[in-house]
Image (cartoon, rainbow, N blue to C red; front, side, top):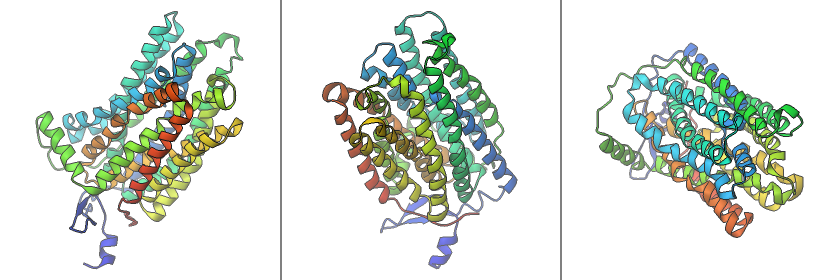
Length: 441
């Protein structure tokens, strides 16, 4: 077989030769039942789902708003960062569900995950509209972080698996480019609305009803996402799922994943990138130092910058993926993360807020690193490999609390320095990932 033949051959997974160069295995049989109409349907559902998720971003993207609320409730920096840590603890959920759920139920998992997610938002909303103690409200926010972390990580892993079974590799690149190029505008609208609501300009929306209003907006959005997720169309997996006891399954999954050099490098890079990004709540609290203002005054503006830049980066990274392959947008996203952290360290005053824009763009590493992993995985192993990848955020779950503790003990700059070092190591590992530029149709 000539190099040209190999370049045109569809890819699904890697195996290594003695030189550790990856060889592409054919996915033509897997995609034989996939039609353009199915791919178009799945792209539309993915697009609409993210419009709704981003519209509810102030409460679905746990970190900035929750940190500001907990700060308002009187807790310290470490407690304010705990919801983000608990979100990352949910990373064990996908691996258990990948063992439990048969191939034909993979779509249903996403529906249930978003359904439970909406119920947790309703719980927090209830604690904010009724006269309960601050301890109960903080507890509800921590509970939201844990349960939403499980639901989000399960939905995230299986959503990419559903795309793997309902789109081509090149089709996914186009879907991600269009989705993350437009849908973050919805988050900008939601975030600016949150800024307006939290500005205390409405006498009938005084604290804590202002925060409750944000949750009231988020609940129907996530309910609608659950419904849309039931409409994905996927090709069937003909192979019957093997039945293993849980512990042998976990061991087999982890061993298989880490026996592949490309997947191992991607996992470690993912952990380090996540650890760096978990500095975000701490960065929002730094507004007290950088601008002499309380975090609540800028929570909505910060979210708007975060998702406005993500919108621009969505087009950029999607175009890079289409033109240069599945590794290039990962490199770009990690570079943007490094730039955002460095900017926060070096630039004072209102210019400091630009760091949230750069980090928002870098956040797309959370889309393109999983896309890299699922693109090199066969359909029968996509959910399992995505589930092992989800252990990365679990491993990085100490990040937010670590950044908070560093700030409490040594100041904000110590947290920034550790985050930058972690992101630079991640960037080094990403450069070592094999790249594939082939266009699959």
